Length: 109
Length: 115
Image (tube, rainbow over all chains, first blue to last red; front, side, top):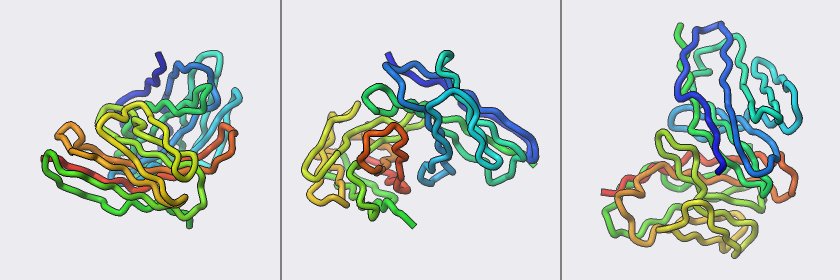
């Protein structure tokens, strides 16, 4: 079967760095997405990886290892506004998205 | 600013009622999707549409139907609402090319409670 695993909840301190991991098993693979969702709001796109390696976008970076079925989202210089859920989604060979349950990130001052 | 607009943010309905959830996008996107989001579960695809008047079942279509009469509008219909359909419903759209990097634009969601 197809599935995505990510931690349910993480806590970090303002100004610190946090890494949110995601492992996936899909039938074929056409890329890995990360979305951010603040409570009561729409998910918004953060990153897309299809090749191995690290993609950096400001304070946020996303890493992919296709051979290991593994990705992580790295958030640096954490701010209180980064408190949100982070959704990992893998795209299978039919271009259908398989979604993780999301990781709720709590930032403490 | 591109937008996906869901007409109702909060609805409370009774068991057996017919429920319409409306979604409109202003980006001229070909593809539109309806998901439901429940605590502890990933987003689950109910239905999607690649073109006007076309619809495809997702992972959990039972108890739902959809309508896409115009490109910009995708409606989700619960013919006879049940309590297990209490959920957050998210509409999304994306352009129609076949590349993998199709970024979804989501609406703010419609929280439905069925009593």
